[in-house]
Amino acid sequence: MGSEFFKRKWLLGTFASFSVLICLFLTQPSLGQSDNREIGPISEPLGTLNMQTWRVPVKLEDSSGMIILEATTYLPDGVGPFPLVIINHGANLDAPSDGPWDYRPDDAIRWFLTRGYGVVVLIRRGYGRSEGKRSPLETSTWSSAKKSLDERANDINSTVDYFRRQSFVDGDRIVLTGISAGGNAVLAAASKNPEGVKGVFTFAPGGWNINRNEFKRADLVEHGFKELGSANKLPILWVYVENDQDYSPKLARFFFDAYTAESDADQELIILPPSGEDGHDLFQRDDGSEAWGPLAETFLERVMH
Image (cartoon, rainbow, N blue to C red; front, side):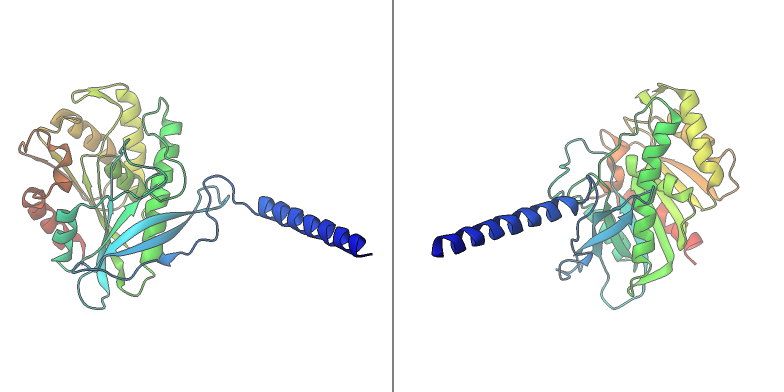
């Protein structure tokens, strides 16, 4: 009888374990979607910049699920509410897609903090610990390129919506900024006219080029930027540097002219004098704000009222 009782217990235990495995399998999130990880702040504010790590929920474009993006906030002293800038990184093939990635443009962060802004540095999908898959912009058709840009815009505008509901943020005084691929991303986000965003500061956006003077598909570039710009109603400051090794002033003007061709929004193109060996990364250099800061300050005084 003891042997029979032991056998019955073993069978029940095995069945229970098997059932648990089935349940776990059935409830696993699909690739690129979030599990039940915590959202919101996941650390205490640290240091003189009140640095704090957040997890931001983002609903996928087709409503098939949700991913969680990582963002870091930096805040002035006090309780706010503060106007907010959301900073977007460029493309980086060397950045990890499954572990920590420390994108931290300190000079830009401090520049905004000293002017009373809260700062969010967003890590878009597929970078660092942010969930989802990176989608390349270098594609041969506008429909595939637009899909990538729509994903980036969704990441940014979902982050806008999430943070504008936080008590320390003045939800109607938000500005977007980004460099290179992040510059494209904020242009795409602007085309959706997100609520609460007052303006966009885009640094060296572009793409589809063979070298700094030639495009692979000028027709694709013109069509794409024109379509994005036609829907935008936000003021935008475009900044390039004359010796940008990705985009010459010729290409910069092409991007700007295409995006603004069918838009009545207040937009301005500035091409700064040469800086260093390659002006493409001026925004995130340790002394970059010495060059772009006065332009940004004039722009913000105009739009952030």
